[in-house]
Length: 511
Image (cartoon, rainbow, N blue to C red):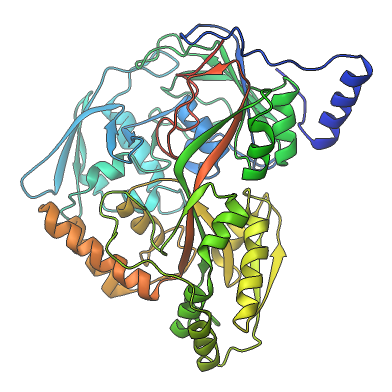
């Protein structure tokens, strides 16, 4: 396993050495096969989470961790490219008439140690996630399951009793981080999952090597080995592909994509409508506990300028609502456009003219530094003294969850119902805006208990109207996710971030 740390200095040194030797890295795509071929080691380079990172799939939060988890583990269901729910370890699901009991049938699948995936493994996994003493990403999603009264009907049938009727229960099965681990598993230094790759070796903050699982229920991967490498700097990820040390570089900026798209040494893959781009204002504290100031922020934002300046045109303007073009999206709410005079008036009315506001940002995600700079300039035109503060990229997401007043924020794809349950309910574990409204929670509870799809849609529309008018997410755009791949890498799907086929390496091959 490679022990290299990918950084800018290393790659510049490597490039210089190649030049001195009179050689240049050449693209290998000319002879690459368009038909799947087996063999080889695929190296994928992502931004990482530092030396304290874990392989516990229930702790997955970063995009790196999400991709690694899906390589080694499975969920009962997952999100399709249109964010519909598709079966994985669950071959089918069926509710009772009251929507309060759901019966799940498991497909025939095995863990890496050869043991079959059983109902007992599912119940253990969900109980672990729901543990009151822990904070796992999917905990809020699973909170409605009455686990003590759920049961294994037999080894391949699970019956989930719910605390209330819930029409959207398949979304729970697909929830981010709701992976199935073996019964009793609570330590993941050498993970055993049911996914397409088996554990090889791990160096936290550096690399993870995985091996092909020849017995995978969904078909064995084409590549023999998969290696995840870590590089916090985008330039290092790009240079890894250009220098032949990697075949897949996650999360590139539009400027980088434009630079390399025509050169032929690196292919650019655009995952359309993949990433929500936003600023998260905390509505439980000054200054954004004042709805007038939040409205001013909505109106001073020049979204088209943000798309052009930050995303290089690779995206669509947002309307302060998550899930553009997804099921239940409130497309009939008029698009917000800049109104600087009205924003100035609201700033004055709120007594906030000249107010100093710290906008937290970091290099944790591409475009965050640029977005903070552009938006700070826009806010100053409305009379607010907004200054960007650059934080630690390795701890950024933990830091901004509870601290500060406004921060750069982004998200991959998930159902609108899941976005609400994870981020906008009083008990949501990743509630970055601190939105807590009992009446809003009640609307959500009513919606998910409503079997009639048209009535459920109307309730989601009401919730979105409230969020559009008073919420803390200033959602300015939906970005195309940009990846860089070596010319020999084939089969990379155009799938939004966080969906099943995004950053999925069992269905790609090396030509």
